[in-house]
Image 1: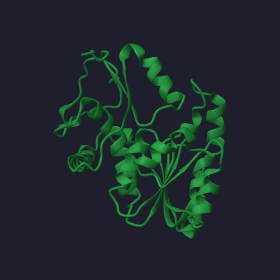
Image 2 (image 1 turned 135 degrees about the horizontal axis):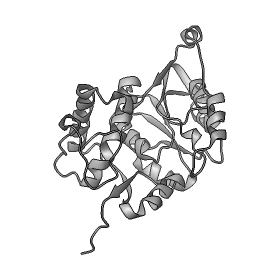
Image 3 (image 1 turned 180 degrees about the vertical axis):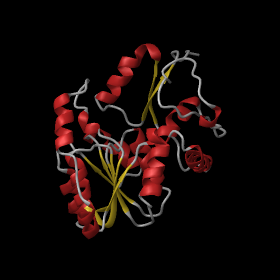
Length: 259
C-alpha cells in the first residue's frame, strides 16, 4: 500500500520506500488501494481529533462515500456509538446494514432538524467534508464538549465542473468564530488535511499499523463500490459525481480478464 499526493493514475509509479506499507495477509489489491487515504482520514478524525468514546454520537456526512464507509466501520469498533449518516434515500438500506443507526436523506429533509428530533441535545462529533454553511450547522449541532472536524469543502462542487459561483458562495458562508466565542461555547473546531502531512511518516505509519491490526481482526474491510479500467476513467468519475457509489471507486490499468 502506498501514500502519494498525486500521479497514481498510471501503470507504474515511483514513490519513496517510506511511503509504502505492507498489505495484511488476505487483503486484495483493490482493498489495498481503497484503504490508506480513506481509513487514515477517518481514523485520525474520529480518534485523534474526535476522541471517540463509548456511548457517544457521531454525525457522518456523505456516509456512503469512501471516508464515510470507513468512519462507520471504525465507529463500530467502539461500544454503543450512535451513528447518524447523511445520504440519498436509495442508499439507506446499505447504510443500515453497515451499522448506521439513523440514515438521513439530506436531499428531502433538513438533517439538523432530523438529528434534533432524535437527539434534542445534538451529537458529540460531526465529520464535516462539506464546508460553507454546513460547518455552522455542524457547530450548532454539537453538545457541550463536542467537536466538529472539517476535512473538506465538497460544497464547492455542484456539478461536473468547478463553479466559481459555488466557490464564492461557500467562501461567503464559511463558518467563522473567534477565540472568545469558542471559549464560552465549550466546543472544539478542528481542521484536517492528510495531504499536508506527507512528511509525518512516523505519525502516519503508526495509524497504518493500527488499521492493519483492525483489518487482521476482521473489524474493518474496505468497501469497494466498483472497479474501472483506465480507459473508462470518465465513467468512474461520473459514478462519483452523480453520487451513485456506496464505498470506494477503484481504477485499475486493465479490464479484468474473464475466466
